[in-house]
Length: 110
Length: 112
Image (tube, helix red, strand yellow):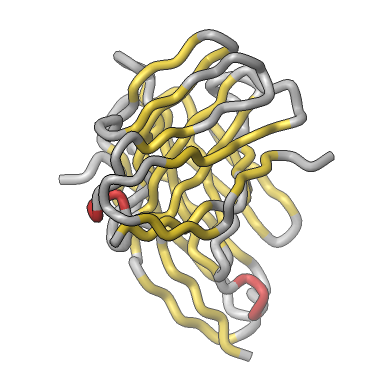
């Protein structure tokens, strides 16, 4: 079992829909990152959080440390939100390495 | 601010050739790292550095070498390229190991 699991792997929605992407992890962590990778490959950091909730524009990230779960929400989705969203966790033990999920491919149709 | 600059963007090598992927950042970040991204797999850490003169191995270090002689630069060397090293390579930096990451645009490497 991967240390970081994302769901769904693929998501297609219509413009305007509310989007939720989930990330579950099995290790103790010091921080969780949400990243966005557009077609063409560049990776951008969206959020880094260790507790609670963060909001930036139409994007909201939440984390529940006890349940080892995080969600990324997109409100009023737009075709430009189409990308791969990647969850990564920083382990709080040993080498404290960063472990990445496989990503969720989101497609927003106009 | 250029951020994290990776060169080249594309490279084709023959088996056995060596090359260096360049990574430079202008944000005075202490922490730099190299990842490879393969289809169906998450990003995997190759090597990382917590400061000039300090490097360590990640999850998949075999066949790669790094050095960090300055804060700005963190080159990744392929010693003898193999087809299994065909991948997209990303360099990333952060001010500390547990700070937001800044990624380069990636290098698509094909080894034939």
